[in-house]
Length: 120
Image (cartoon, rainbow, N blue to C red; front, side, top):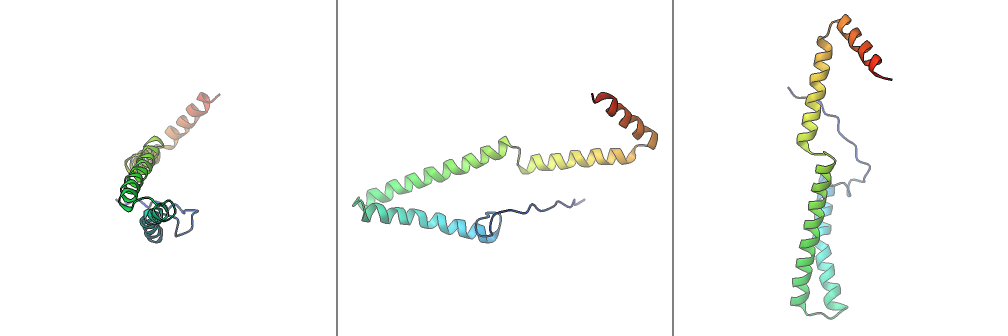
């Protein structure tokens, strides 16, 4: 059974939203160009040897992007914004809704009274 999951609308423009094809393409292009610009600045402005500049820019960019990716993963784990957690929550909500549908009117009324009694 396929459930209808509402699409979340992003407030970001299409080119900045990595969830769209345009955003993924733009982000890939930016991540490709940043080390090249950094290399040109370091070798041209600061006069650093090309081999040394390439080595350190490669290491630094790889380290930076790895740390950035790991931090997004840790953030998604901490906020439980992962596919499994979302599916489990949707399943639990569907089970509760199904059980409520199966209750008789008097059982439902007793449940409502019990909940109202527990709330202070």
